[in-house]
Length: 415
Image (cartoon, rainbow, N blue to C red):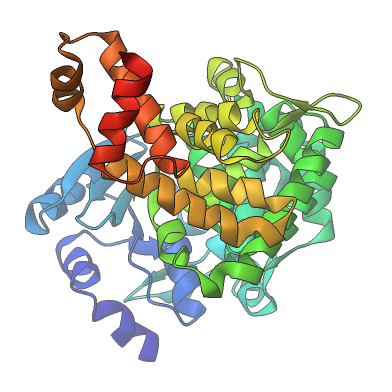
């Protein structure tokens, strides 16, 4: 009765069960998380009849957008706040449906009439906190489930059972046949997890990352060392700087800024002698071209900007070099500052201060283009932008402190 009250207290659940035909069930992650003591927001229903009709009604009633997913295999209602209600047709019996799912933790159904239903006491695996496959063929039917196993384990802090891991490893190369949009979403969910490093290391051992990212295990192992250094840096300095909230913000495609840095580090390229490779075509570009991942324009541009900025890391870190690094990093100033600090954490505080100075000077220009044209008596042109850039750089380096200094700098060097 406790679970019944908890589930039907949700107005969406109550409406669906009150207005849909018989044999309507809540399934999957919603039921899993209810059993774990959580109250999830996304819902997944299977209906023997009228799945599409019910979804369209729900969209009208709850102010959502109706979406036909996977050619009438699933009908989604996208609600405000990024919440989803999925409605899928039940083509066989509910037990046959559950047996066709990915993992035992997700093969549980509930309805007001039947209560919880699962084959072979699958509910027990939630208490045991394990990821267990149902049938090997289920993994082959949807290769994305291979990556999902690690994501679920990381998200829920579950252990992937040995037999299941052996199958994931065996079928690892089939992940390349999954739709790139789905693969990208699953990878990003994994990278968003707090304890992602442990599960990335397991992915590496099981050859899943090399299949997905088209990098060697040697290359990926180096990348994971960098991710570990990144995590250590944050544990050491996060409490003393106002960076935590910034990194928790969404970057793009559901990826938060923590995870964006992890993505960048994961995609770095090295040669066989462990020398860093920075070139015009990043690993993300190659994966996008090969339809392995589907990355937003913002993510692709930002990954390229950071790689261009990182290629300037060698040598003494003077203010002049820092300015060029920050300039090339585009909007990823804090991200490049963190990357600069990974190998030498002790300089993090100084670099973060310089990053803030750069942002201040960029957002509080002493002279604009019109001022420069008046000072020099010239028309608009490329040279105006170049002069403005020189003023900004010298402001950052401490050579220019006010508008008077800026005018004298321009008169001295450009007349």
